[in-house]
Length: 134
Image (cartoon, rainbow, N blue to C red):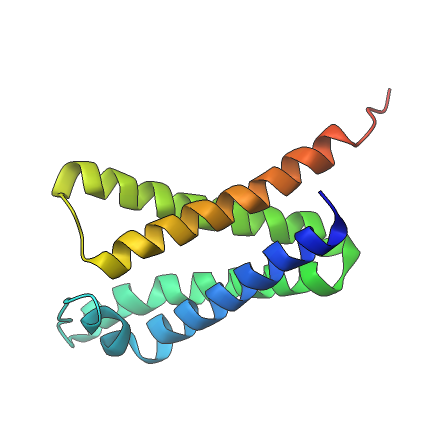
C-alpha cells in the first residue's frame, strides 16, 4: 500500500474523530437525539457522555500528527485502528446482545470497521516490510 493510501486513511480517521469527538463533547444532545436517544442532563450523565468524546479528540490529534509527521505515522495508524475497531466490535457485540440499532448506528458500524481495517492493513504491511534486526 502506498503513502497516499496511508495519508488518506489517516485523514479520514482524523476527520471522523474530529467531527464525532467534537459533537460528543460540545453538542451531545444533537448527536444522540439523531439516533433516538434522549440524554438525562444530570452532571453525572453528561460527565459519562462527554469523557469518551475527549478520548476521541485525542485520537484525532494522533491521526493528525501521523498525517503531517512521518515519525507519528505508525502511532496515528495504531490509535486509529484500535479505536475504530474497538467501537465497531463493541457495536457488533451490542447487535448480538441487544438487537438491531437504528440505521445511522448500523452505518457507523460499517464505517468504523472499514476504516479501522484499512488502518490495520497499513500497520500489517509496514510490519511485513520492516526487516528484523538481530
